[in-house]
Image 1 (tube, chains in turn green, red):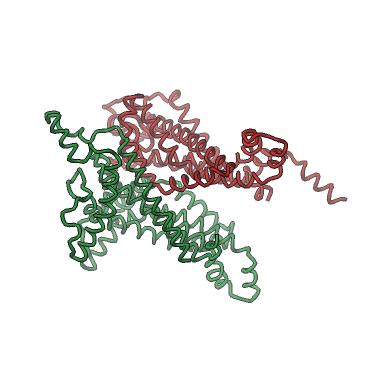
Image 2 (tube, rainbow over the protein chains, first blue to last red; image 1 turned 180 degrees about the vertical axis):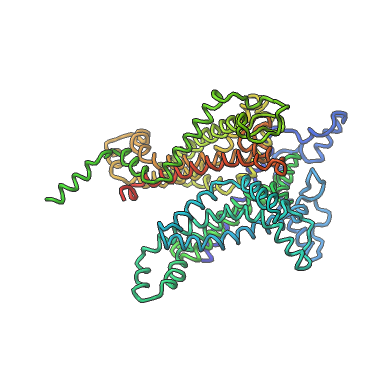
Length: 335
Length: 305
């Protein structure tokens, strides 16, 4: 088991380096000029100096190496300094945003909790809804509930978040006035009332993302249960005289969770992609919105760092999925 | 004896050709049939619409702006008095064309990579690592990036609309071929061990001929199924890019762009969000049902059940 995990980790590291190289190359091959916003009155030799100050005159491999060192070596030091009060990163150059002239990671750390809260909550809601639906529609295959469930999940799967977003705003914020249409990030939870306000402003973005997640997970849950229901061990369990609820909820469910857990882990990046759109719709200032702002502002270091963080999340989730799969299904490890 | 006769009778039912069987199974799936009809109606509507509908998508009539649905303008008009129905038709034309073109590109790349990886053992490891690498790229951020970075040069080179079309189709195509490649590779690996391929090789058929004559016809059905999913995926991605303001230029309607414009008027005219949103959702839903039915119909284990 340990060997397997280490092997997976060793594959993940080069993958991440290659991905960061791909992102870097896409950014540097792009034929646009970061100096385009500078006024025409600035003389060309000053412009040349500004370019050099941004590190643009250097060869590509030097730029890439600098970014790697800043992101993987200096930023963790800053992180350690912050928590333990040490002085490792004193005076070292960090990844600086061209837009805010502040370290990119500072903004990311400010914005990440909003994204994580919304994504995590929506995922918890999606899992809590979809697993019972999946079990019941598999157990009563071709019943009215199953047919309706299949149709509804298909609809939920087909409606993109940029339509459900405005749709729930129209229904719940404009017409019913139950929830606010935008997310107020300055709001602080101090007592019960402010907690309720926080819940209410999270309701709509979470709902939009949860619809997407529920549709996918319940489909997988249903087919996983169906695969297991005809197995011999289910017949044995029933023949032993176990009650139907124990057969389904203990024996079948445990075996069916193996593929579903992988799907849950692998779909998380998709939800992050959806979060970029959802943050835009509900004006949540998370890292998705930061990415869009950085793209509009031509802020290459921020774009590079944020895209890499998304890649990191995907590779990390793949790794967790693989390891979980191996823990749950011992046959996998010996491949 | 009696039994054998009856089983022969079973074989003689109408449509005992391969595609006849597929069609018989496909017809049984009501959702798939409705999805297919709906999708082809939408395609015909957006392709024929501009010739039949009296209003131009970009004709500004400022005196009749912000109208609700009426007999003259069934979907109403926008803030510049442009007919929403005409814009929906024009938008659908772009969205569906982008979807089809991107699907073809993704399918072509995916099939190519899948066949090479499955058929030639030397290439397998390399190509599959490559596929895994693409699968772990953050696709939406990367797509946004490509839109932003390459928009200007392509607009200069091919004109704003054509340049954007090429950019969107190519970037969606090169970021969505991976599932097809994986499925095709798996099928090719299995087919390579089958007797007819071994027989073909033993009489000296060249690799190229084996792939074109024997392998390719047998992997058509998974390709067909991923084609439907590919169209749905491409339409959603294009709409997402347009919705985030990084797609086609503002005066060039697509469904995602119309949705984005409508969100600005959400408080005043909430119904405007519905038309493009419903159009995208209905198209994708119908394609997904079509794909579902197709998958069942093309799977010989399910067929005839």
